[in-house]
Image (tube, rainbow, N blue to C red; front, side, top):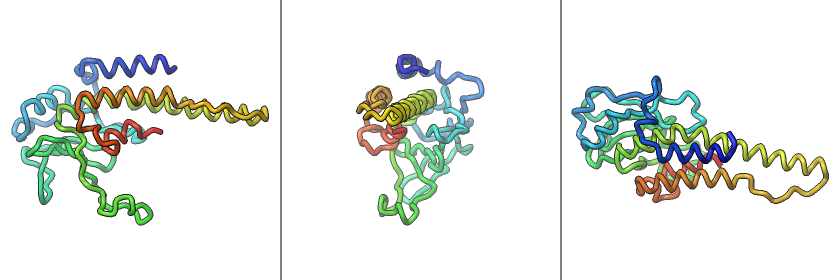
Length: 219
């Protein structure tokens, strides 16, 4: 879609009532009845029960979270210092609600990078808080489910415009104008980031947080 249409759609998704984004046949996955026994806040239980989470997307390139609810009433994830309930996944990362704090944690299946990249995480990849609570995660997850394809499309359009300008300049033997074709795309990313930050500041307070990287990850 053209930029103006994309901008309007992004704004609509960011401001829409959450229920209008979640009640889509074949998309929403709801937690098991065991949710009632989970030791998390009533607000988080309600968000999970009413809205569920999107099904796992088939196209992993869109970097979206998907539902993967544990069936049991006791925490399925256990580490030496905390435990929690598994609610979703993103690639090879499990999404877990911390039983004690209620925060939503990204738990990587693979802790160690290949030797060539090991210097990036010398202590291995650690668990990371991605939202302060499950209700915020449900809200972000659903909005991101619909936002991600739009951002991908706008990024790809900017890429194509940049290549076309370079090709045109090459064929005409003229120097290509220094135009940043990705400015409109980055403006859309900024709108998403600001809206999410207003809902849950902890999730985006660090520029290297998971949500920060997700929003900026298409560039």
